[in-house]
Length: 362
Image (cartoon, rainbow, N blue to C red; front, side, top):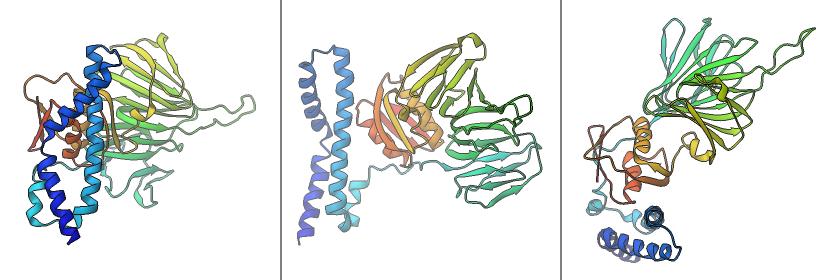
């Protein structure tokens, strides 16, 4: 009987209290504004911070509700409770996964196993990270690994360097590196964990570290051994290089004299040939590698480009593009609808999913 009482009471909470979102939002916003009124902030800052804190409070409230729901009510969920879940879109979109295509020098393509996380380039063959064979090949020269929209994959290069490739990205690399330099080409986004490699010592020359270079849109990144992220998507107006460990040199191809040397926690931004450097939280730049979306005062259009790549959808704006910024964190392993609900908590934006298209309106 106690379980039935819990079920009836929680059903009341869901159907009555949680549907009064406007009232809850008003109460939360009023309380937040009273706090900010005492901080002597400008109207613009009050509006921005109120929106951000309203989102955080809504997320906290949602977490409490989900916990209570699972603890008290989930074991007795029945057909008559289906109305509570009716707001989940029927055209929901599942997250991306391990998907990639390998292209050999002769043009042969290999669709890689989605049950595997990555491949290792060996002396005479390619293997998956669990040791099983991809294929045996004697081919030398440039190869490429490409992920589609909604795909990600890992690659271990011949020198032991590890690369995580984000969605809609391509990495071109040689089957063997030479003794003087290691060069790869990137389009899209990748995280690099570069291994140290020394040249052979001779009678006249001592062993030296062999540099590793990443050539991408408008720039070259040179390292000796480090961890960093490069985001260079064609539909983004800037190229961002974020250093996690070690040291890198970032050189614009058109303006080699403006080379910047980054320290850990710094990010270079190349836009229209001009480069700036700033301090950043590296967790934001590498969120995708860690399986998350992490937004901090990020513009809606940039967020939507990231979402479109991962969920392989088309974004359609109905009316003017909202001039909004958002904050929040959620796993990339969630369905699209769960991502959108978090964004909707900030207010003013509405989403609808239909036929692999995401419609956005105010």
